[in-house]
Length: 184
Image (cartoon, rainbow, N blue to C red; front, side, top):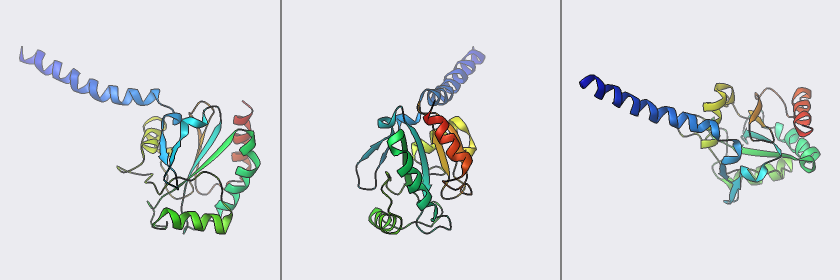
């Protein structure tokens, strides 16, 4: 009897954890929402059928110059079904304190006009649910190790590939992948 009770308890507990993880597999990037840099909802579900690149960004990073390349690929592909979402984060202590400061810096310095979220954690226990989902499904390669880490999402909302901070926005392999996804 005691053995049966322990077995039942084990099944209940393991079922809870399995169900929680299994449910993650049914989600796509389209199931997540951010708060945008102006305080409005930014629903990734609005981008179904589009190729999306989510990039964690920072204003005071050695890679901040990548904003110029990000803006150029946004300009080139935004009318072809491509969406670029910048996610300012202070996880690496290189971001301004307020969304207004980030927005002003990005617009005035780089002419950024692609969608940006509010300042958002992208790593660890405090990470935004989108980043927790990405890690649970696609593993550690989706966890930003530094600013300007890129997650490329296909039209169905699945992560197609990831690119480190070292990969610039105009990298030929990244551009080829964007074009392949747009044409698929």
